[in-house]
Length: 137
Image 1 (cartoon, rainbow, N blue to C red):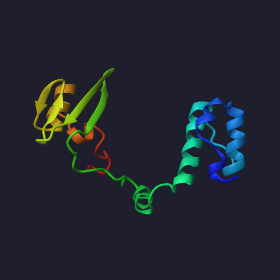
Image 2 (image 1 turned 180 degrees about the vertical axis):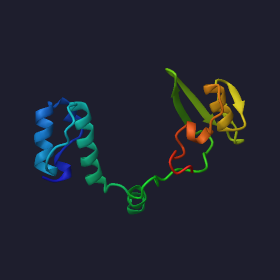
Image 3 (image 1 turned 135 degrees about the vertical axis):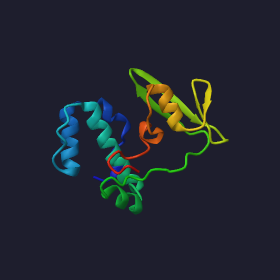
């Protein structure tokens, strides 16, 4: 069976047992997830990765290094960052002049936005998940 033999779209119609059987026939023992939705997504990703060639070798190397997931250090204008804080989803948009728009107000830094949201001092990039806490990047 080749990757083109499976169309990822109808996978969501299969039951958990059918998904596990399909996984086992292609990749060996199926993951232990009990959610057919998650297993269908995982299977669709694997099929797509096989079909499209997966991640580039450099990205795979970076992901194998502990705490070294690639992170864009410079945010381009139009980038949208979201963070859920105390049950509310906050969205920040990077403006062309390098400032950050949150709730209709402009801020000079992500740290100012984080302080506005949380009410206490935060490292803005860390608050929005752009830095690894352990590495302190």
